[in-house]
Each structure stands twice: as C-alpha cells, then as structure tokens.
Image (cartoon, rainbow, N blue to C red):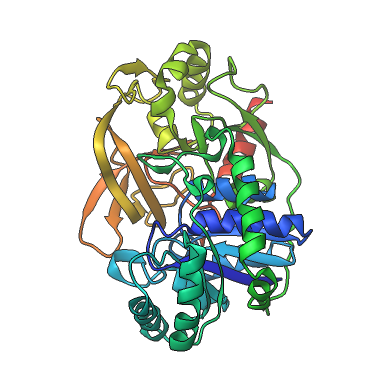
Length: 447
C-alpha cells in the first residue's frame, strides 16, 4: 500500500476540504483508498467517511505508540493510504514535535504534501516553506498544493515557490462556497448535520480534477515496506451494545475493530430513539459526542434512561467516555443552560462552562484493579470538552502531558470505566480484550 500525507503550516489551511476533495476524486477514478486522520480528532474522519463511503481511522502516536500506528496502517488493505495531518506540520505535545504530523510521517516514512493558503504573501511564503524543510531532517515534505487560491495568483506563485523551495506545486483549489464548512464549540459540525455535504464534496472533487495534477500527486506516494498482517478475529463470546446516533458519534474505528477482534459482537442502538437497551447484551459502550445539544430529547426518553441506569446499577460492564460520562449523570445542562434529567447512574450534574476544560493529552494511572486497568498501570488518554461535571470521580490519577498539572478523575470498578478522558483501544494495553473478557464473564454468570 502506497502512503501520502496532506499537512499544513497551521490549522485552518483547509486540509480537511482538500482531503475530502481528493478522496472523492480518487473514488471516481476507482482507486482503492483508505483514509486516516493524524491525532485524536473525531470529526474530520466523519468527513473522510462521507467522501469515500468507508470508515476512516485515526493514527495517534501518543495514544497508540509507534507500534500501534504501524499496526493500524499495516492492517488496512487499499492501493493508497491518504493521511490528513493535525494542526501545523510540527505541532505536537506541549510545544514539541512529539506525536505531530511530522513525527507520524517520520515513523512510517510517508511523503507529505503541504496545503497552503497563500493570501498576503509571495516570496515570504517560500521562506516559510524553506523553514519547514530545514526544521527537521528529513522533513518528508514532497510537494505543495495551494488552497483558496485564485487562478492568477497560482500562475504567479507556482514558479516562485518551485524555484525557491525545489518542491513541485501540484495545483490549486480556488475559493469556493462549497469549501466553507460550518462549525461549533468542538470544531466543525459533524458530517451528518450538513444536509448537502455530498453535493459539496462532489463539487470540490470536480474542481480538484480540473486544477490539480492528480497523477503527479499520486506519483509522490511511497510504497510501504511493512507486510500486511491480518488480525485473526476471535469467535464471538459476548454482545456489547454501542450507543451510536447524533448525540453519541465520537468513535475511534480501531476501538470497534479491537472489540470485534476480542470476541465481541457489536449491537448498535440509539439513546435518542430506542426505548430500551438491546436484549441479551453483556456490555455497554457509551462514547463521546454532543449529548448537551440533545439533552432535552435524551431526557424525554425516560424509558431508555431508566434502562441504562438499571444496567449500570446491577453491574453490566460499562465504558462511558466524555459525552457518555455526562449522560450517566443525574442531570445535564443544554446549550441554553437548562438542566435536564439524565440516566442517574452517577450522582453529578453536567454544566456548561463556555471554554475548553482540561484540553489535550494526558495519562491516567490506576490505584486499583478495574474493568480496563490494573493497579499501577498508566494509559495515555485525551480530553476535549466545554461541559464539566460537579462529580468527576477520584479513581484515577490524571497527569497533563508535558506539564506538572495533575488531578483526580473518573469512576472505575470491576465493571465500570466512566470519565471524561477518551481511550484508544489499539495502544499498548489490551483494553478491548479486558472489556470483552468481563462481558463474557457476565454472560456466563447470567445464562
């Protein structure tokens, strides 16, 4: 499988727009593609998935480690792996290049194309690109693609940039209304909330075909040297219910794969629309999302709230991250500040803060054995939320990555992980296997 990355100098350069346009254009050409997003972002992969029609995956060196990233890459079968970087090319943990897009490219030897918005500079832009080329060796930069660039500006800039940097300018996307994607407090609206998204992506792909040299772009991709190793799925031994709808939509696709490979049959349901949990389940996974934007509807589905409260109370193995954690609380404020009753499995109240809370990478260390962690183990995690809770728990010791900031958080027992931090199941610890093991034990005990 050949590999290529789209990166940028900074956030807001239009990487996601260009990635979706390219994915759709390659699909038109019947080229088999697997898309990836560097870092912990949940929303951009939804756009990749919409453009390509197959699930996108995250590659995160902090959460997975180098072997986890290589494993995720190697386990996908396609002619081309297209990666979208996060933030700026070298932006990593705590002001370092650790876990940056550049380090991901370096870990897997992936050429990177720089997506650049050129407004307001010409030769200075070349100087900035030269700086990126020399900042780390090797830089892995292999080309430039101009975004939101008018044809005349491209004609002027391309020879300057090629002369001064030695990198090919592969074309441009002009300013387009279709490229403007609406956003909210956690970033872009989710792909499912933009009703004309498919038409937008198709228009972008058609434009990319006209103004970008797609064959030259593909020629930069480098073949992978690591062999494909197909994971061997375990026989189904338990059923885990996965909350998935507009309120709960933040998933790492690897987490679902890891559960399946650990012997879990996944049963999807909607806390917004279904009246109770699926029958015959042995575990429950409440992932993140936007429950605060659907607080009234979640609250009005009292039958589902009670079904989940009872399940957690009797010890059904449960993982609840961020939005799922807020749903388990006694109440949750909506974006207007109105509190609504939630599942009530935990005693806290979720409330709006108006700013990011404990944002970024962290590590969690366990005081005692629990559903996912063993005493003394440390696991990498990530937080990103504007809502907080009056009762965040004290079962785990949290440490901000690269800083001295530390705090207590989370509820952990032999049947529960409930906390704001998100976990990746394709890292160094066998989190999915432990979840499936406990769910299988539940099945044996309740047959």
